[in-house]
Length: 184
Image (cartoon, rainbow, N blue to C red):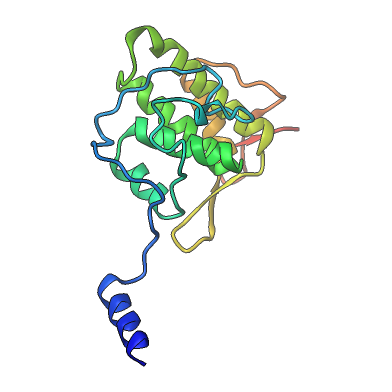
């Protein structure tokens, strides 16, 4: 009985939360990206797990923690979090957010000047890998329901970065007047 009361008290004080599976002693906001390998973060590469600068290489962020990192830790830490998730169990949303964060690194100059063109190419490669490997990927809202397909923003991001979309993808205008990436 006493153990149950202690457990209940601990639960009431601590609440339920997604435990982070990593510990760190420095700010994740101040990281810069040093390109360890130009394929890291692009499925099927797992080289991000070997990158000595990856703060998540040995312990992957949890389901809620990845969103905390995405919203508050900056593009470099977010790239490493999503790329680590992608390397440990590939799916389209992870590939998409890996590319999104590479764009953030590129646009904010968060890598060595010499690496920035490589980071841009990595972002294009990440979006293309999402289209090639996860063409039916969706982003989900907080309730877990599909919010929007990721193929269209991936297609548009490649074009905005000056890349060329491959694999037969085209952008069409739907009857409702919105753009949609399709592979006929």
